Image 1 (cartoon, rainbow, N blue to C red):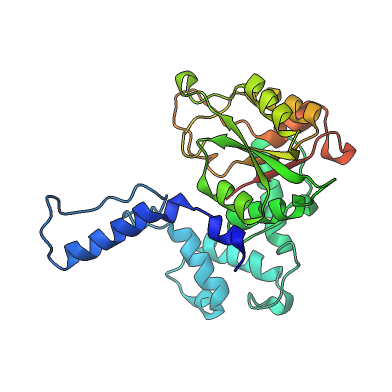
Image 2 (cartoon, rainbow, N blue to C red; image 1 turned 180 degrees about the horizontal axis):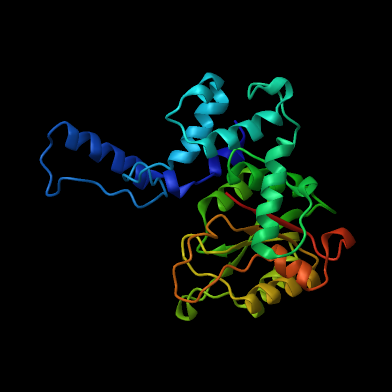
Amino acid sequence: MNPHIKKMEYAVRGPLVIRADEIVKELQAKSQKPFSDVIKANIGDSHAMGQKPLTFFRQVLALVAYTPLMNDPNIPSDSKERAREILSGCAGGSIGSYTDSAGMEVIRRQVARFIEKRDCVSCKWEDIMLFNGASEAIKMVLRMLNNEIDGKKTGVLLPIPTYPLYTASVTEFNMQLIMYYLDENKGWNIDIAAMEKAVKEARTKCNPRAVVIINPGNPTGQFMARENVEEIIKFAYKEQLLILADEVYQDNIYAECATFNSFKKNVDGNGCTLQHNAISLFSFLF
């Protein structure tokens, strides 16, 4: 068996969660406990916690999967319009047909329009790729970077605390974990000097190739001001690092007068366009 697989740890579904599941079953079997319920705060499974699903999404999914529902008067016209738009981009007008490797063009164009509206900068739909969740996209990029040079592993800078997917994937691919610590006393802010020190020390044993930024933070919940984002872009440019911007929780900012600052907007705003290869960026949305 691959030894790197055996070394992997994914805390979101690790020993604590396994024990919690056992306790749930014990409660269901009427086992006596000093409590009556288990609250699972380890994962963002909102529907399991009772959140009502968005009707529009469910209706569109049902319509594209079973087109006779287009004749159902109980389904709103906007859901039908969106379903027709999606089906128009499917070969044979069927959602069961094969798609391009990067995903359906009609959806990629919609994503590009969303990014342009969000950032007020241009976005080429050809630069968009669709995946079965952000985790698959992140692992694909890490796999692409995994290449030993002069006998040294590829190094990836990860924030600590971090989302366990990253540490698990770096271990799985036998890459070098380079940790940079977030400052709890400063609202889990990033210390550029500490990142520079981490890269300098890591170059003796690996080839640092990428820096992971989670914005808003997971699990820390902090979000970055524009100045923070620009600092990191300049740091990555100086150190020749690919930026992996995990922006999955961009809609989950609740502080008053706070706004989300995407890396794409700031990369283009600094004049470091992706086309000119001055800075390389992968941003992950959900």
